[in-house]
Length: 381
Image 1 (cartoon, rainbow, N blue to C red):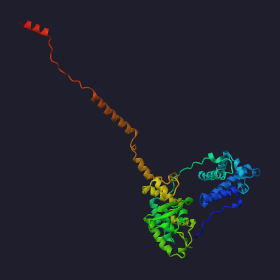
Image 2 (cartoon, helix red, strand yellow; image 1 turned 180 degrees about the horizontal axis):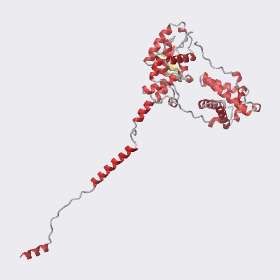
Image 3 (cartoon, rainbow, N blue to C red; image 1 turned 90 degrees about the horizontal axis):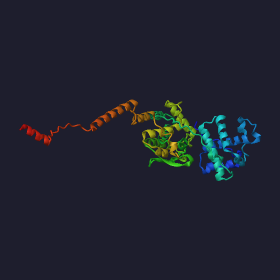
Image 4 (cartoon, rainbow, N blue to C red; image 1 turned 30 degrees about the vertical axis):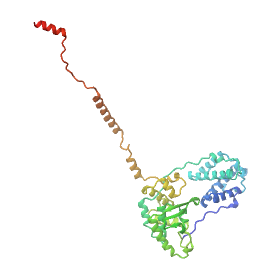
């Protein structure tokens, strides 16, 4: 069933005023996505509940398992002035040990808390100190992203026998060729596609706009789908590019199901592949086969910095092996070094011999003293 995917609404009535202001700031001024705002809210709510349990006497005997029952609606902003750096590290220890948060989850909590304190200290000026100034983010392990090989990608595209083949094929093609995020694909409108100039306007995180150019495969898939889309009832009334069977904007969950079904038909299910892994695949194949550098890839994927893009620019084992084999030191072993040294010593010895002065034997003519000559003449007489 092609249903819609909803975020859990934030109960603003259960939030203190300063938190409501902060949520509005994230949504309007920072233009964060609803999912990111919700995640920040949940992390901050947990932090405030933890602080109340640690510092408010009425909660000192409360078990940690019941911490979710603590109301934060009356949390005084003045209590944040009592927070020390040690309190923050104790909270991180709590979420690590008691809630089994991994590095990435802890990193998100640190980001949320740092952002809140910065907002209250710098923007609103309702607190007098910022204890998060020296709070460090957990170091994240940069694992290589999982991706489909070129042959697996071809197999995936060859198994799109669905109820809406043109639409579903186009979706997979854009994922694999353009490296779109799920939210970016779902948000595409027909007006974002410029077939004449072979490019489309994409809105990424924070509504950041970028232009993505379309190759031949994308153009053909889009043209085929748009022809079918024209024949759908009420399609002209809908701005969304990809429509559900009800002629409404397709949901994120439905797109995920399309990808999951395609992976299953291609014999690739159960191997850890997902919609986001198609984004990994697009970036990896561009880097391996398209002579694309990190800066270009950063622009294509809509990243803020190349540090994020670097996780996509990993190399296949065969490329790494080939690079190692072509190192100028690849064939240099202790044996070859010894042999080269012996050869050098022999050459030096030969050169030293050739540099010695040549000994020449010269036969001098006999020298006779004048007196001896006179004596000889007298004797002969």
